[in-house]
Amino acid sequence: MAELSQEKSVQSASPAAFLPHSPLKARFIFNPYSGSNRRNPWLRDRAAAFIRERGLDATVVDTARPGHATELAAQAVADGCGLVVAIGG
Image 1 (cartoon, helix red, strand yellow):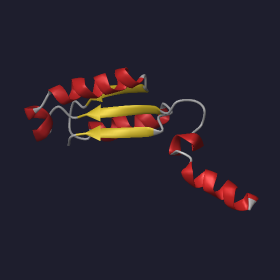
Image 2 (cartoon, one colour):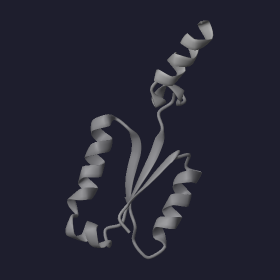
Image 3 (tube, helix red, strand yellow):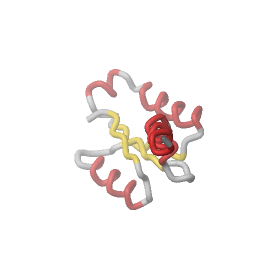
């Protein structure tokens, strides 16, 4: 019976329970030249507000040229980011 209750507690635990105690570091890569972002430039500000409102250890960076997102993603990983989010492109 103890095995069953232990198993149930693991199944009902939230995913955050299994994350390291330190917050997840993230990088949001915004492509201002993509069609949807060009039409909706406010998305960058919304991403920054999302980060700020939740107190996340994250930043938003912009791409400047073709292929730049790949460089920014590689740099994010080198900087210790466990999550890289592409916004457009």
